[in-house]
Image (cartoon, rainbow, N blue to C red; front, side):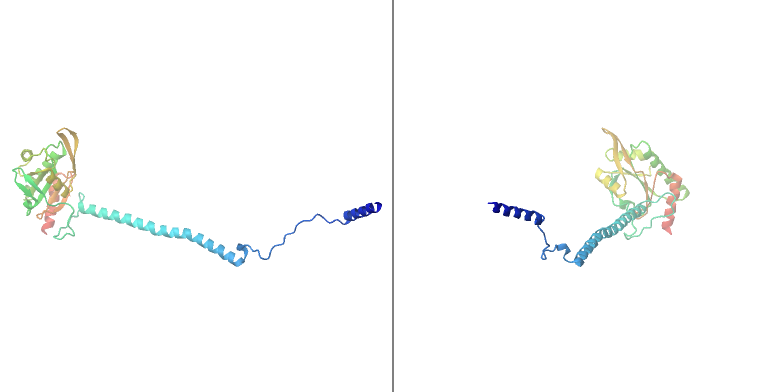
Length: 274
């Protein structure tokens, strides 16, 4: 028994002296495991470079698209503005301008103002644009109930007739077209123009016919301040000069007085006779 104890003691001493450090597992990298992104250094660099190129190309493509769109939009806007300005110049000539519209029988230089109409005079006779062919015509759109501008323009027309006949020995057909057909009957128009000059030719007609004539000559008008049957008519107040072919040569605003208007008419007449 003592021998067994001694053997046990000797074994413990040996274990305490030569006992190794606690066991720790060791890991060795497997030769078969290789991360995909590190398998080849050159492939990784190429992949990174391609990604950078794609990222750089995206804003470049956006810039290229914008570079095409913006100039195109600017050109379209500028072209539209020039087209509108050109049409406006065809339709109007400012006071004091030395320009005049040249009319030919083709449609290239024809104005955008004027056209056919069918109305009635103060004797209920049918009148169309062809009725006045062969004559120079001074045309005004108004209405007999106008409180201010209308009477002044008709008075100016009557004065122009006298100036042209007395100073230039030139006759022109003055035409007054009512834009208030609901109230301006032939009899009403006749009584109205008689107060200024009986040589003025008064025309009226159904609402549809008057509206068509106004549209042909680009005349704006509308009822305002309506109170039952009492109302005013707001409108443009231009006079139109038409040549013997019934084509508009010029139109004149309210800023012209009778003398200036007569002189301007004769300028156009002399140009046409050259």
